[in-house]
Image (cartoon, rainbow over all chains, first blue to last red; front, side):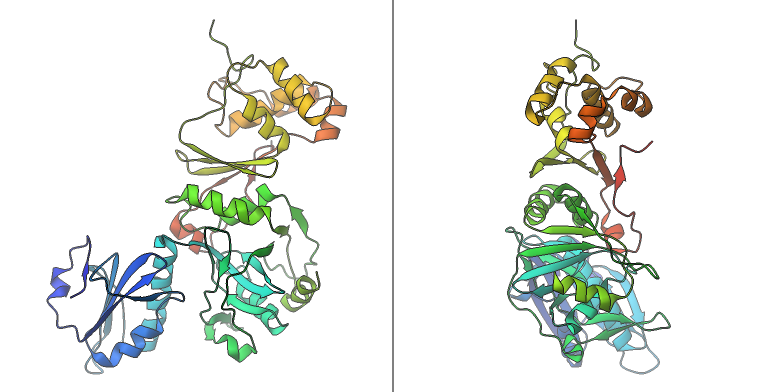
Length: 273
Length: 144
């Protein structure tokens, strides 16, 4: 039986869980269980890229999905001991579940450092685009893969101790004209998906500004480290790791900073460098 | 007599992490959860601020490392910026104003090595790093 290492989940543990499994996600142990075995594919669909099966029974984070048996009831998600999301639409709940789970792993990973950034591969090196939500990161990543770059992630740069960036290739979150975000599989954009870690070649610190021309300032390595730190989820809990890994990354990469206009135009410029 | 900041500055040592990046220095303040990037001249002044070296001696060291004439105003300016970032232990109660420090800089020194720069940012919380609440490219402690 799966159980949380710390949280008091006895009120949930008593439930009859029909399917359960655990994962090692970059050094963080995750438990997933559901009240109905039909939900197994749904659970598998939210597994973070890079995670692998584990036989651990005591986990760092435990997710429990109660599947509604009839249309009048809600599907309910628990994170550890607490109810965190519910919906009558299972797909909607799974989207929230995935986002929450990936964030949890990004914060709690022990063997990798997660930086909020889009990543593509180009000619054996990675282009990193650090930035938070609504900075146009996904649009630029999509433009880069349409222009021929290899897709790694539109959400997290996953760095190892040597500063290599690993794929975190979940579907891209593409925003439509109404501001809604839709998951788009990279294959739908004609993208190749990366499977090998890459050294970082270029770090592009930018945000969309209507009518802006890309006239970047080259950042010093120190400025580049600060730009990455600003988007590093575990910087307060793992500052020594963050400084060491990002210092090595910035030393070997070129940091560029400036506003951008059209994503497709910048993609062409970056790939022509 | 105990050396004072104005004569013998001492770099803070407690609750900080230091990473050298080329000729720059990244300092993480674990108490305030702030990160600072020190450019070459600010790094040199900070590294040699051990409470033993006086400002004139630091000016000699800086001049020697950078290949310029010793310039005490450049050191005082760096100390002021470092103190502003809480990286000097024996900082004076009233810091040297930037205007005064800049006025005292010799044109030769500033032109050759550039101003000592300390770029600072508050380390994001987990939620901040994942949200749209972005501060931009850090805060330059050289600002007014």
